[in-house]
Image 1 (tube, helix red, strand yellow):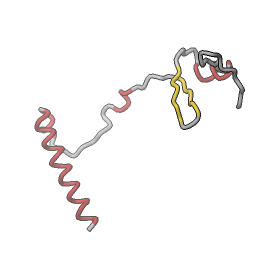
Image 2 (cartoon, rainbow, N blue to C red):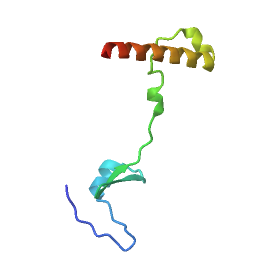
Image 3 (cartoon, helix red, strand yellow):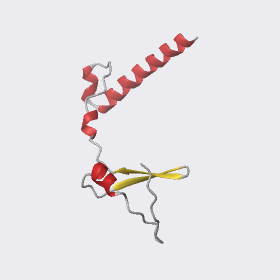
Image 4 (spheres, rainbow, N blue to C red):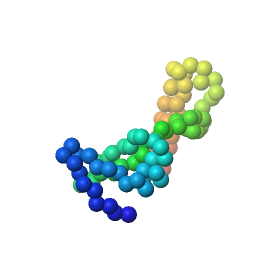
Length: 91
């Protein structure tokens, strides 16, 4: 759908009523993103970060989770082993 809108002296435009009722659904904030020579307008929505909780699996001894230092060492050691395996596979 294309609509021509007038831009007032302060740079404001009116968003089409159909789009507001369909996409905004009563919300009052939008995000405006600048792309090359156009603007992208999207409804602002809150991101639910809890959906990402408990989604990472690592092959580390559960005892390493007792404190941050031991977990960091275990993860770095694991990462070093994975990197060396990748290097061996590429040669």
